[in-house]
Amino acid sequence: MQRLAPALREDNVPTDLISLIETILAATKEISFLVSQAHLGDVMGSTVDENIQGEVQKKLDVVANDLFKDILLESGLVKAISSEEEDTSVSGEKNGKFIVSFDPLDGSSNIDINSLIGTIFSIHEAPADMNASDPDMFKQSGNKQICAGYVLYGPATMLVMTTGSGTHFYVLDRTHGGFSLVERNVQVPQDTQEFAINMSNQRFWQAPMQDYISDLLAGDTGPRGKNFNMRWIAAMVGDIHRVLTRGGLFTYPADNKNPEKPFKLRLMYEANPMSFLIEQAGGLAMTSQGRIMDIEPTDIHQRVEVIMGSKNEVEACLGYYK
Ligand code: AFP
Image (cartoon, rainbow, N blue to C red; front, side):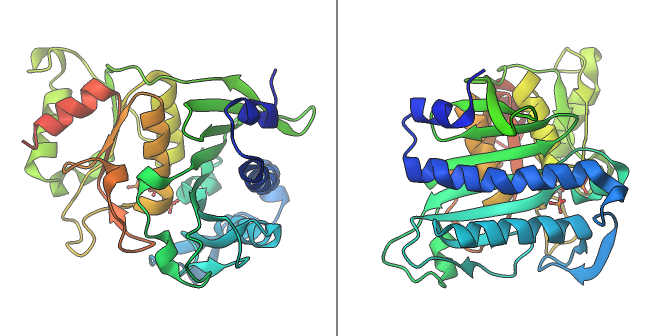
Protein backbone atom coordinates (compact mmCIF):
# COMPACT_ATOMS: atom_id res chain seq x y z
CA MET A 1 0.00 0.00 0.00
CA GLN A 2 1.30 3.44 -0.93
CA ARG A 3 2.35 5.70 1.94
CA LEU A 4 1.29 9.32 2.26
CA ALA A 5 4.38 11.23 1.08
CA PRO A 6 4.91 9.29 -2.17
CA ALA A 7 1.17 9.57 -2.90
CA LEU A 8 1.37 13.35 -2.45
CA ARG A 9 4.49 13.60 -4.61
CA GLU A 10 2.61 11.76 -7.34
CA ASP A 11 0.04 14.60 -7.19
CA ASN A 12 2.91 17.14 -7.50
CA VAL A 13 2.34 18.54 -4.00
CA PRO A 14 5.30 20.80 -3.13
CA THR A 15 7.78 19.54 -0.52
CA ASP A 16 7.08 22.29 2.03
CA LEU A 17 3.33 21.58 1.88
CA ILE A 18 4.03 17.86 2.39
CA SER A 19 6.09 18.82 5.47
CA LEU A 20 3.19 20.89 6.81
CA ILE A 21 0.72 18.04 6.23
CA GLU A 22 3.06 15.64 8.03
CA THR A 23 3.30 18.12 10.91
CA ILE A 24 -0.49 18.27 11.20
CA LEU A 25 -0.67 14.49 11.07
CA ALA A 26 1.91 14.11 13.84
CA ALA A 27 -0.53 15.95 16.14
CA THR A 28 -3.47 13.83 14.97
CA LYS A 29 -1.56 10.63 15.78
CA GLU A 30 -1.15 11.83 19.36
CA ILE A 31 -4.84 12.73 19.54
CA SER A 32 -5.76 9.34 18.11
CA PHE A 33 -3.77 7.70 20.92
CA LEU A 34 -5.32 9.91 23.60
CA VAL A 35 -8.83 9.20 22.30
CA SER A 36 -8.17 5.45 22.36
CA GLN A 37 -7.05 5.72 26.02
CA ALA A 38 -10.35 7.39 27.09
CA HIS A 39 -10.68 7.19 30.89
CA LEU A 40 -7.17 5.76 31.20
CA GLY A 41 -5.80 9.19 30.32
CA ASP A 42 -6.92 12.48 31.84
CA VAL A 43 -8.90 13.71 28.83
CA MET A 44 -12.54 12.94 29.56
CA GLY A 45 -15.13 15.46 30.80
CA SER A 46 -15.38 19.24 30.64
CA THR A 47 -13.23 22.14 31.70
CA VAL A 48 -14.68 25.14 33.53
CA ASP A 49 -13.95 27.39 30.53
CA GLU A 50 -15.95 28.48 27.50
CA ASN A 51 -14.53 29.19 24.05
CA ILE A 52 -15.20 32.37 22.05
CA GLN A 53 -18.44 30.83 20.77
CA GLY A 54 -19.76 30.47 24.32
CA GLU A 55 -19.46 26.67 24.27
CA VAL A 56 -18.13 24.82 27.32
CA GLN A 57 -14.77 23.35 26.34
CA LYS A 58 -14.19 19.66 26.83
CA LYS A 59 -10.79 18.67 28.22
CA LEU A 60 -9.98 16.98 24.92
CA ASP A 61 -10.86 20.18 22.99
CA VAL A 62 -8.22 22.01 24.97
CA VAL A 63 -5.59 19.26 24.83
CA ALA A 64 -6.07 18.81 21.06
CA ASN A 65 -5.96 22.56 20.46
CA ASP A 66 -2.72 22.94 22.44
CA LEU A 67 -1.13 20.04 20.60
CA PHE A 68 -1.96 21.57 17.24
CA LYS A 69 -1.00 25.06 18.21
CA ASP A 70 2.38 24.04 19.61
CA ILE A 71 3.37 21.71 16.80
CA LEU A 72 2.32 24.14 14.07
CA LEU A 73 3.93 27.20 15.61
CA GLU A 74 7.16 25.30 16.31
CA SER A 75 7.33 24.00 12.73
CA GLY A 76 8.42 27.36 11.30
CA LEU A 77 6.16 26.61 8.32
CA VAL A 78 3.12 28.68 9.30
CA LYS A 79 2.71 32.43 9.50
CA ALA A 80 -0.41 32.15 11.67
CA ILE A 81 -3.07 29.73 12.81
CA SER A 82 -6.73 30.12 13.66
CA SER A 83 -8.75 27.62 15.64
CA GLU A 84 -12.27 27.09 16.91
CA GLU A 85 -10.78 27.23 20.39
CA GLU A 86 -8.80 30.48 19.98
CA ASP A 87 -10.41 33.93 20.23
CA THR A 88 -8.41 35.29 17.32
CA SER A 89 -5.54 34.19 15.08
CA VAL A 90 -2.18 33.32 16.66
CA SER A 91 0.96 34.46 14.87
CA GLY A 92 3.81 32.13 14.00
CA GLU A 93 6.92 32.49 11.81
CA LYS A 94 6.91 35.88 10.06
CA ASN A 95 8.13 34.35 6.79
CA GLY A 96 5.94 31.25 7.06
CA LYS A 97 4.38 30.33 3.72
CA PHE A 98 1.09 28.97 5.03
CA ILE A 99 -1.82 29.74 7.31
CA VAL A 100 -3.87 26.94 8.85
CA SER A 101 -7.46 27.03 10.21
CA PHE A 102 -8.62 24.08 12.25
CA ASP A 103 -11.26 22.58 14.47
CA PRO A 104 -9.03 20.48 16.72
CA LEU A 105 -11.89 18.29 17.95
CA ASP A 106 -15.09 18.25 15.93
CA GLY A 107 -18.09 16.57 17.54
CA SER A 108 -17.10 17.35 21.13
CA SER A 109 -20.43 16.10 22.50
CA ASN A 110 -19.42 12.61 21.29
CA ILE A 111 -16.21 12.46 23.34
CA ASP A 112 -17.77 11.21 26.54
CA ILE A 113 -19.97 8.64 24.78
CA ASN A 114 -17.03 7.03 22.93
CA SER A 115 -18.51 7.94 19.56
CA LEU A 116 -17.13 9.50 16.36
CA ILE A 117 -15.00 12.64 16.61
CA GLY A 118 -12.36 14.16 14.37
CA THR A 119 -10.03 17.01 13.49
CA ILE A 120 -10.73 19.29 10.50
CA PHE A 121 -8.09 21.49 8.84
CA SER A 122 -7.84 23.96 5.99
CA ILE A 123 -4.62 25.40 4.53
CA HIS A 124 -4.19 28.63 2.57
CA GLU A 125 -1.08 30.39 1.33
CA ALA A 126 -0.01 33.21 3.65
CA PRO A 127 -0.12 36.63 1.99
CA ALA A 128 3.56 37.69 1.93
CA ASP A 129 2.78 41.39 2.45
CA MET A 130 0.72 41.01 5.65
CA ASN A 131 1.88 41.00 9.24
CA ALA A 132 1.75 37.61 11.01
CA SER A 133 -0.42 39.12 13.75
CA ASP A 134 -3.05 40.41 11.31
CA PRO A 135 -6.17 38.18 11.47
CA ASP A 136 -7.30 39.63 8.13
CA MET A 137 -4.90 37.15 6.50
CA PHE A 138 -7.59 34.56 7.09
CA LYS A 139 -10.18 36.47 5.07
CA GLN A 140 -9.66 34.29 2.00
CA SER A 141 -12.45 32.35 0.33
CA GLY A 142 -12.62 28.56 0.30
CA ASN A 143 -11.68 28.70 -3.39
CA LYS A 144 -8.16 29.66 -2.34
CA GLN A 145 -7.59 26.61 -0.13
CA ILE A 146 -4.54 24.63 -1.24
CA CYS A 147 -5.28 21.68 1.01
CA ALA A 148 -8.14 20.57 3.25
CA GLY A 149 -8.91 17.46 5.19
CA TYR A 150 -10.05 15.74 8.31
CA VAL A 151 -8.85 12.93 10.51
CA LEU A 152 -11.62 10.73 11.82
CA TYR A 153 -10.94 8.99 15.14
CA GLY A 154 -13.23 6.01 14.59
CA PRO A 155 -12.69 2.27 14.84
CA ALA A 156 -9.90 3.06 12.36
CA THR A 157 -8.16 6.42 12.34
CA MET A 158 -8.63 7.76 8.82
CA LEU A 159 -7.34 10.79 6.95
CA VAL A 160 -9.48 12.21 4.15
CA MET A 161 -7.67 14.91 2.24
CA THR A 162 -7.48 16.91 -0.94
CA THR A 163 -4.77 19.12 -2.37
CA GLY A 164 -6.95 19.94 -5.37
CA SER A 165 -6.34 16.69 -7.29
CA GLY A 166 -9.24 14.60 -6.04
CA THR A 167 -10.26 13.47 -2.58
CA HIS A 168 -8.36 10.51 -1.19
CA PHE A 169 -8.81 8.19 1.82
CA TYR A 170 -5.86 7.11 4.00
CA VAL A 171 -5.78 4.85 7.05
CA LEU A 172 -3.38 5.18 9.99
CA ASP A 173 -1.36 1.98 9.77
CA ARG A 174 -0.22 1.20 13.29
CA THR A 175 2.31 -1.36 12.03
CA HIS A 176 4.54 1.49 10.79
CA GLY A 177 2.88 4.54 12.39
CA GLY A 178 2.11 6.35 9.14
CA PHE A 179 -0.95 6.95 6.93
CA SER A 180 -1.37 4.68 3.88
CA LEU A 181 -3.47 5.48 0.84
CA VAL A 182 -6.48 3.15 0.67
CA GLU A 183 -8.76 4.84 -1.87
CA ARG A 184 -7.83 7.37 -4.53
CA ASN A 185 -10.33 9.75 -6.15
CA VAL A 186 -13.35 8.95 -4.03
CA GLN A 187 -16.60 9.83 -5.83
CA VAL A 188 -19.84 10.85 -4.08
CA PRO A 189 -22.73 9.07 -5.83
CA GLN A 190 -24.88 11.69 -7.60
CA ASP A 191 -28.17 10.25 -6.30
CA THR A 192 -29.05 9.17 -2.79
CA GLN A 193 -31.88 8.02 -0.54
CA GLU A 194 -30.24 9.20 2.67
CA PHE A 195 -30.19 12.57 4.43
CA ALA A 196 -28.65 13.99 7.60
CA ILE A 197 -30.23 16.83 9.57
CA ASN A 198 -30.87 17.56 13.25
CA MET A 199 -34.64 16.92 13.16
CA SER A 200 -35.13 18.36 16.65
CA ASN A 201 -34.79 21.85 15.09
CA GLN A 202 -37.59 21.25 12.59
CA ARG A 203 -39.97 23.89 13.96
CA PHE A 204 -37.25 26.55 13.66
CA TRP A 205 -36.37 26.02 9.98
CA GLN A 206 -37.39 28.29 7.12
CA ALA A 207 -40.34 27.19 4.96
CA PRO A 208 -38.29 25.77 2.03
CA MET A 209 -36.38 23.36 4.29
CA GLN A 210 -39.61 22.41 6.08
CA ASP A 211 -41.19 21.56 2.71
CA TYR A 212 -38.16 19.68 1.41
CA ILE A 213 -37.82 17.46 4.49
CA SER A 214 -41.61 16.81 4.59
CA ASP A 215 -41.41 15.54 1.02
CA LEU A 216 -38.50 13.24 1.92
CA LEU A 217 -40.40 11.90 4.92
CA ALA A 218 -43.46 11.23 2.77
CA GLY A 219 -41.38 8.51 1.07
CA ASP A 220 -42.71 6.55 -1.87
CA THR A 221 -46.23 7.89 -1.33
CA GLY A 222 -45.03 11.53 -1.59
CA PRO A 223 -43.85 13.74 -4.48
CA ARG A 224 -40.32 12.23 -4.46
CA GLY A 225 -41.73 8.76 -5.05
CA LYS A 226 -39.05 6.96 -3.03
CA ASN A 227 -38.25 6.19 0.61
CA PHE A 228 -35.43 8.04 2.38
CA ASN A 229 -33.33 6.96 5.33
CA MET A 230 -32.02 9.41 7.96
CA ARG A 231 -28.73 9.48 9.93
CA TRP A 232 -27.33 12.05 12.39
CA ILE A 233 -23.96 11.54 14.09
CA ALA A 234 -23.73 15.04 15.66
CA ALA A 235 -20.17 15.33 14.36
CA MET A 236 -19.78 16.78 10.89
CA VAL A 237 -16.69 14.62 10.35
CA GLY A 238 -18.76 11.47 10.84
CA ASP A 239 -21.68 12.60 8.70
CA ILE A 240 -19.48 13.86 5.86
CA HIS A 241 -17.42 10.69 5.96
CA ARG A 242 -20.60 8.67 5.38
CA VAL A 243 -21.62 11.00 2.52
CA LEU A 244 -18.18 10.66 0.89
CA THR A 245 -18.34 6.89 1.30
CA ARG A 246 -21.86 6.09 0.12
CA GLY A 247 -23.56 9.37 -0.79
CA GLY A 248 -26.21 11.39 0.99
CA LEU A 249 -27.31 14.93 1.71
CA PHE A 250 -25.96 16.67 4.81
CA THR A 251 -27.47 19.93 5.93
CA TYR A 252 -27.38 22.33 8.84
CA PRO A 253 -29.92 24.85 7.55
CA ALA A 254 -30.69 28.35 8.77
CA ASP A 255 -33.04 28.38 11.77
CA ASN A 256 -34.69 30.98 13.98
CA LYS A 257 -34.05 29.27 17.32
CA ASN A 258 -31.79 32.18 18.25
CA PRO A 259 -32.32 35.11 15.84
CA GLU A 260 -28.80 36.36 16.59
CA LYS A 261 -27.33 33.04 15.47
CA PRO A 262 -29.20 31.79 12.38
CA PHE A 263 -26.42 29.35 11.40
CA LYS A 264 -24.50 26.74 13.39
CA LEU A 265 -21.52 25.55 11.40
CA ARG A 266 -18.34 27.55 11.08
CA LEU A 267 -17.16 28.62 7.62
CA MET A 268 -13.39 28.58 8.00
CA TYR A 269 -12.75 25.29 9.78
CA GLU A 270 -15.90 23.26 9.09
CA ALA A 271 -17.82 24.31 5.95
CA ASN A 272 -14.93 25.36 3.68
CA PRO A 273 -12.66 22.34 4.16
CA MET A 274 -15.63 19.94 3.88
CA SER A 275 -16.81 21.77 0.74
CA PHE A 276 -13.37 21.35 -0.87
CA LEU A 277 -13.45 17.61 -0.12
CA ILE A 278 -17.02 17.17 -1.32
CA GLU A 279 -16.51 19.13 -4.56
CA GLN A 280 -13.26 17.31 -5.32
CA ALA A 281 -15.31 14.10 -5.01
CA GLY A 282 -17.94 15.30 -7.50
CA GLY A 283 -20.54 16.50 -4.97
CA LEU A 284 -22.03 19.95 -4.34
CA ALA A 285 -21.44 22.19 -1.31
CA MET A 286 -23.88 25.07 -1.10
CA THR A 287 -25.86 27.47 1.03
CA SER A 288 -29.40 28.23 -0.15
CA GLN A 289 -27.87 31.33 -1.80
CA GLY A 290 -24.81 29.96 -3.60
CA ARG A 291 -21.54 28.04 -3.41
CA ILE A 292 -19.97 27.92 0.05
CA MET A 293 -16.41 28.26 -1.28
CA ASP A 294 -17.32 31.53 -3.06
CA ILE A 295 -18.10 33.27 0.25
CA GLU A 296 -15.65 36.07 1.07
CA PRO A 297 -15.13 35.69 4.84
CA THR A 298 -15.60 38.63 7.18
CA ASP A 299 -14.67 36.91 10.44
CA ILE A 300 -12.58 33.94 11.54
CA HIS A 301 -15.47 32.43 13.47
CA GLN A 302 -18.30 33.28 11.08
CA ARG A 303 -21.08 30.76 10.70
CA VAL A 304 -22.81 29.62 7.55
CA GLU A 305 -25.73 27.60 6.26
CA VAL A 306 -24.66 24.24 4.83
CA ILE A 307 -26.33 21.97 2.26
CA MET A 308 -23.86 19.48 0.78
CA GLY A 309 -23.43 16.01 -0.64
CA SER A 310 -24.82 14.07 -3.61
CA LYS A 311 -25.17 16.46 -6.53
CA ASN A 312 -28.70 15.64 -7.67
CA GLU A 313 -30.10 15.65 -4.12
CA VAL A 314 -28.49 18.99 -3.24
CA GLU A 315 -30.00 20.43 -6.42
CA ALA A 316 -33.39 18.95 -5.48
CA CYS A 317 -33.18 20.62 -2.07
CA LEU A 318 -32.12 23.99 -3.53
CA GLY A 319 -35.12 23.80 -5.88
CA TYR A 320 -37.34 24.47 -2.85
CA TYR A 321 -35.61 27.84 -2.28
CA LYS A 322 -36.32 29.14 -5.80
P1 AFP B 1 -18.15 21.07 17.89
O1 AFP B 1 -17.09 21.38 16.89
O2 AFP B 1 -18.33 22.17 18.89
O3 AFP B 1 -17.91 19.78 18.51
O4 AFP B 1 -19.58 21.02 17.13
C1 AFP B 1 -19.92 20.00 16.25
C2 AFP B 1 -20.82 20.56 15.17
O5 AFP B 1 -20.42 21.85 14.84
C3 AFP B 1 -20.81 19.68 13.91
O6 AFP B 1 -19.71 18.85 13.81
C4 AFP B 1 -22.09 18.87 14.00
O7 AFP B 1 -22.61 18.54 12.74
C5 AFP B 1 -23.00 19.79 14.78
O8 AFP B 1 -22.16 20.60 15.59
C6 AFP B 1 -23.96 19.02 15.64
O9 AFP B 1 -24.95 19.87 16.04
P2 AFP B 1 -26.17 19.46 17.00
O10 AFP B 1 -25.68 19.77 18.38
O11 AFP B 1 -27.30 20.32 16.57
O12 AFP B 1 -26.43 18.01 16.83
